[in-house]
Amino acid sequence: MNITQFIKYLNKEKGWELQGQYYAIIDEWRQWWRGNYAPFHCIKESGLDGNIHTRDMYRLRMPKRACEDWASLLLNDKTTVTVDDKQSAEWLLGDNAQQTGGELGRLDFWHNANTLVELAFRSGTGAFVLGVENLAVIGGIAQNSKEARICMDYLPAECILPLTIRHGKIIDTAFASEVVVGGKNCIYLQTHKLTMKNGVQQYTITNEYFTSESEDSENAEYKPAPLPAGMVKSFSTGSDVPWFSIFSPNIVKNIPLGPGLGISVFSEALDQAKHCDLAFDNYCRDIYLGGKKVFYNKNLLKSIIDGDGNVHYLPPDDIRQQLFVHAPGSDPEAEPAWHEYNPDLRTEANSQAVQDALDYFSFKVGLGTHHYQFNAGNIATATQYTGDRQDMVQHANRHQIKIEAALLQILRAMLWVGKVLTGAPIDENAAVTINFDDSYISDAETRRQRDKDDALNGFVPKYVYNMEWRGMSEEDARAAVQEAANETDGGETLGFGGDG
Image 1 (cartoon, one colour):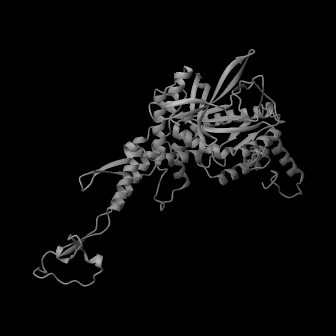
Image 2 (cartoon, helix red, strand yellow):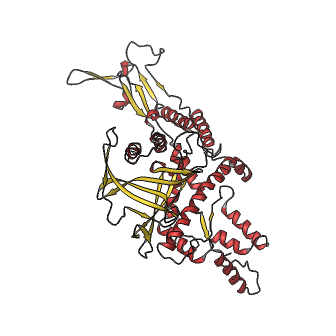
Image 3 (cartoon, helix red, strand yellow):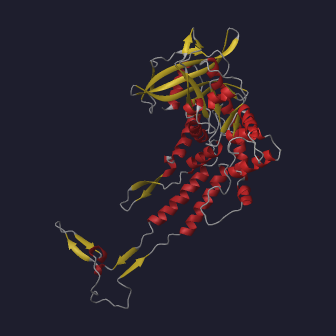
C-alpha cells in the first residue's frame, strides 16, 4: 500500500486535507528500520575496468535494534494487569497467575502489543483498534449478541489518518491497512467519527474496501470494492467510548507536519546510525581486504598457452610446487623474486570506532551512553550499572506514561464491549491498573524479596503482595491471605497463600 498515493485519492474523493508529505518521512524511517536506506547504503565505486560499480554497505542495522530494545523494556511478559472485580478479571485475564487466559490470551494480546510498541517507536505512532466479529446491527445501531467476538488490529503510523484533533487528542480518525480477500490485495479503510445522535454523543464506524492499480506511479487508480460477507457498511456503537487507542514515543515532535502523529525514537539519531554503519563497514572492508598477498617475480611463474594462443601465468601456489629452480642470471643477494604482504587489519582501532559510534547512537535514542557494550570482561557493580542506566530509566518512565494511557483506554473499550455487546457478566467500570516491569532498575528477585520483607514487617498489607506478584484481584488476594492465616498450625507462616 502506497499510503501517500492513497491519501491523494481520499483528499479528492472525501474532501479531506491530509498531509501526505509526512508519510514520506515515516517511510524513510521504515527504510532505516529495515536496514536499507538506498541513498546512503548503496555505495558507488570505480572499478579497474573504468566502470562504476555498486555495492551494499555492511550494516549494523541499529535503528531496528533500538526499537526492539525499547519494546522489550516497556512491554514484555512481566507486564501485568490488575482488575478490582473478580469476574471482570477472569473474563479479561483468565484465572491463572500468568494472565495467559481470558480475552487477552485469546487475542494473543501481549505478544501483539509488544510488536506494536516496536512499530510505534519505528514509525512514531501506534494504534490499538478494536473490532467485533458477528456483531448484530439493527437500525444502524450495534446490539447485544452472544455470538459477537472481540478482535484487535495493531497498526503503525502509516496506517493512521487523524481527522479531528482536540486539545492534542485524536477524536476522529481513519485507519487504512492492506488486507487480502480471495487472493486479491485490497485496502481496508475504517473510519471512526464521534457524532451526535438523539442528543447523545456516540461513535459511528464506517467500513470501506478499495482495489488499487499502479500505486507506485503518479497515475495510481483506486476503485471501491465490495465488502466481505457479513461486514456492515456503517453502524453506531451507542457510546462515546472510542474503539481505538493511539500512542507515540513520549518525545516532543520537532517536525511541523503530521498533526496528531509522533516521531520515531531514532528520528534525531540518523547521523549516529550512519556513523555506526560507516564504522562497521570500514571494519568489515579491512577484514575483507586483509588477506595475505604474495607477489612473484615473473620468472617464477609457469606460462601456459591456451588454444587461442593466449599466455596465462600460474604462480607456484596454484600448481602446488614445493621446490623451485632459481632463475638463471639473477643475483641471490638482490631483492627476492617473491615477497608476501600482510595488510594491517586494524582490529583495535576499528573496534573502538564501532564502540564509539554505538555509544553516540544509544545516547541519542535515550538508552544511555553504555547500553551496547562488547567489553564483556569488565564487570560493573550494581551501583555503577544503575548509574550508567539513568538516562534509560528516565526515558523509560516517560514513555510508559503514554503506553499506560493507551492500554487503559483499549482495555476500558474491551470491558465496555464485553458487557454491552456480548453480554458478559462483568463490570465495564471496574478499576484497571497496569503493572510495568521495572527489572531494568533492579532485578525481579531482589524486588520480590524486598516486597515480601515489607509485607512481613507490616509496612504494606500482605494482600498487596499477592496483587503485585501473582496478578490477583484484590478480592482473591485478600481471600488467599485469610485462608493462609486460617491454616496456621502454630508454626511460622507468611500468610500470603500459595508459595509465599
